[in-house]
Length: 102
Image (cartoon, rainbow, N blue to C red; front, side, top):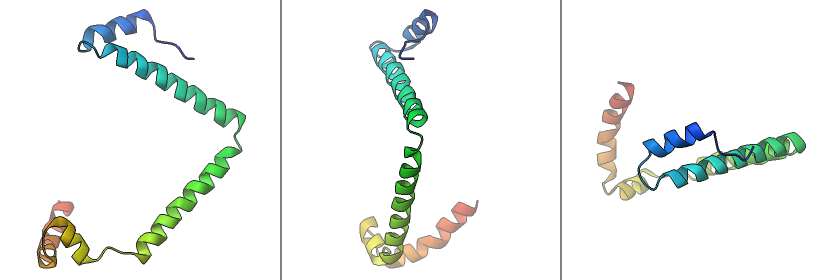
C-alpha cells in the first residue's frame, strides 16, 4: 500500500502546485499511506490493545475534568491574563453572551 498514485494524478498535482511543493506532496502521500496501513495492521493484529488505549484515554479525560473542577480559574486570574480588571470582565460577559446567542 506504500505507493504513489498513478502518473495522471502525479502530473496533475505537479502542474497545479507551486514550484517546490511537489516533493512535499509526494512525501505526504507516502506518509499518509504508511500511517493508515500501520493503523490497519495494528488494529487487525492486536485488536485487544484498543481496549487498553480506550481506558487510558478515558482515564485522562476524567483526570482533566476532576482537576478543572478542583482548581477553577479565579476571575482575577483570567482578568490578569487578559490585561484587564475583573469589573471589565463582568461588563463584557452579557455582550459575549448576546454574541454567542446570535
